[in-house]
Length: 329
Image (tube, rainbow, N blue to C red; front, top):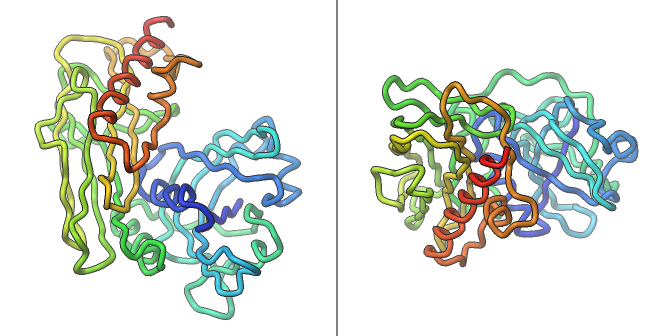
């Protein structure tokens, strides 16, 4: 199994851990490491999808300074490699996210010195992506497993004032049946459908300030019956949002964005949905390379200071670019 340590060295790394814990089962997330942090034997297999199919354990390491004397690490989530490639001196992994760890550290990785903390011998030796012989975890895909995992993260200084989101599913509102993420990491939706977005929020602190998230869609493709903003002030809460797809049949790719407002430290989530007729199942292009619309569509993570009006524009532009790609196929 590949064990990846994501550290607190940069804010973008810290946010990637939040995203890792937020995405629905089967969603794809990307991880990038400089070659110097990767075990040499892994690097030899990295290029040209040489790691596809390998199991992954994404872990968070806090205290990335000096010789890591005071560093602590906890497991976050398992996954499986769906793409591995080398770009210059960097190795890039696309991972389909699977079970949560329930904050349970595999015995093979448990540190002897402190109960509940992972061994970090490899990072101390200069490797943050390593291979370990780790047994298969028990299935842990429910909300309770997610709660246990992020509660452990919430005890770390970095995430003490954060809120955690888990997008459990998109489902059909009529019968609650979930819509699975397909092999391209998006949800297939049909016209004239009422969709329910189920998400859970956990705030580690009992008396945390109010946290606010915006839910953004291209309203010509997905309309929400709820306000665009969600406010959370309790330790644990569940939200179910209703979304309506258009009556008229059309082919389009678009995003649902769940974004923390300025002052809220939390994950930035994007869900790619594919609107099409049931009989039409041919492959769609993901975007228009080099176009402004494609850049806006594929950005995914917007800075916290981005004005709300600009976020709406980017959502609309991204949807237009993805739709144009679909039409050209």
